[in-house]
Length: 343
Image: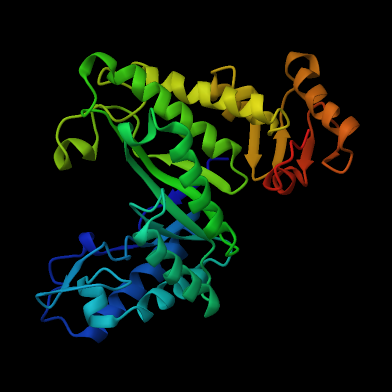
């Protein structure tokens, strides 16, 4: 069944025109809470995850009432009128409307750590300490290709440390809004460099014991917000004619790299490593570490890979019928976090 993520319940750049300085604070608060409650209730059980608060963390220097300030929160009209407590209320309202929905705090320019990530950490930590139902932190992946490649290993280390820090708070982490600008590279090497950069990013996401999912911010270079904001570019996996780019194949390479590192990664990833992601989605249902197969494949060859794990680390896998039912990997993420190969 298709899993849908909702983006975004509240974002300061998408307020209606009547939200201005003249609007009383109580009316703004009522409107925001009504929006959250109405949308989440309407799509309860259909939309499985929501970006509840989007990009509320302050950049390095913000302007509030005409003065440059340092602080945790972006000085938007929402923060000016209602204060940071509104974030608590929005998450609580979303949870009350659908207790089973995954609720996300989403932010940009935090993937590789740094001062802004520190501010977001303080915000999320405070929310959790107050018992606010924040389940996931989304790390937006709007990246410059040259920041990923050729500085691959150094950048992957920074990303891993940043993700682990938040995972240690007890929240899930996702890579959200992934696209990659390439215009700063010489034209002759753009596509191949982008392939290697996407390869590194995909491998890190799949190998990481912390990342629960990733989302690309579009699929064809024909349509991307990048063009209007940064200038014409080629940030995605399909070209303007909807053809596969080297970047697409780089993502496939990243899956293969992850499997070579940890061959006990979920069966659905093994299927995807053949470069046929559409088959993976039709034949395998991946939910966390649970893999349910609807068909056998390659005469059970993939399941034999699971069996090897059972033989070497019996505590790693609990398996029902290998051919067509389900398998649950119970401890490989914890073992990997300790630097072990769980196979």
